[in-house]
Length: 381
Image (cartoon, rainbow, N blue to C red; front, side, top):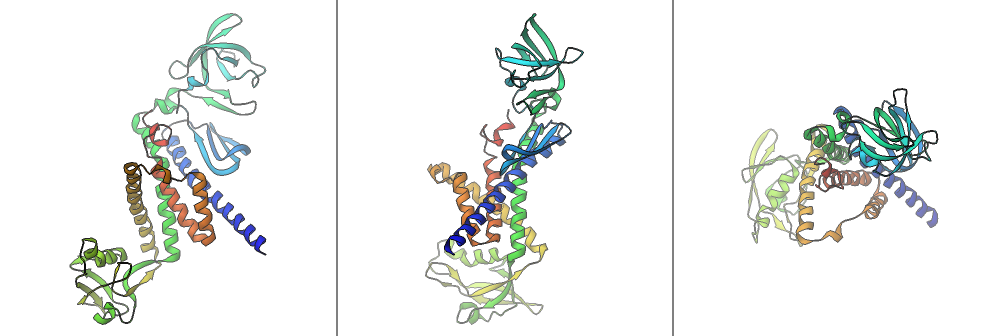
């Protein structure tokens, strides 16, 4: 039985890891894909997964595929790097011509066995769309037909497109929009996942659901159903507002909490209540109440996106601390992330959904870092 139990856990963990990476990374790439298409950038490849292709189909100029390793996905946009880099000067190349002597297919001689073979002498696939090739008849310049195919291997190819369909041919604001679309999709996903978790677990409200006996709240006469409207003349709109107001004196350096002036709504009327928090052994100030939980989507969905905004700020602070204190060793790579997902899988489905939201948010933040190897550097190409 222990062996079966361990096997079930590993299967659950593996499924959780695949699903989290697949959803977070694929939606990130879909953000780039969608905005690139809307901006008029050609997108030769959109893939779900990595490695060998299991299934592929073409629609328009894009090849869609599902691949063997389902740990994310990728999108290839025309002109992210100059198309000329595919054909260095001096490289041997095979090519096919149409009736107008325009190049319609290019590739390695072993992948294009029926093509002419020559050596690249000059190439311009951005403005002039032409190549000078050293052939048996000498150096000849051939125009390259728009959407001529470049053979990646004997069975797969991508198109060569004109400048107006390349990333490099778009104005800076469009390039920036394409690059930012990936992180934005991650932020939206994080908000949606947090909202879904909230709809399952509920969110605490400012209405009292329980008053613990022999506590300051009990002594002050607070009752179940009371709604806390203000604390010390500060409007209370959420449970977090309430908690922070109770802790305010301690945070500001007060050794002993002062009495709190509460404005409470009860039976349609408001009344003042004074309560003095007590200090727990952990140093936290408490008054002895629990909140009622709300499952109303009108509350839980906005709260999910509020959590996303709050956690984004906390993530920025954490990155700042990493840089300031040079704590880069504390960063986790894919293996560390997979381990965290496995631990959450042990705790249950909703923990996996929550960690997927956290990972999506961090993926979005990380890709905003202006380093050329990351998405954040590409808008400056």
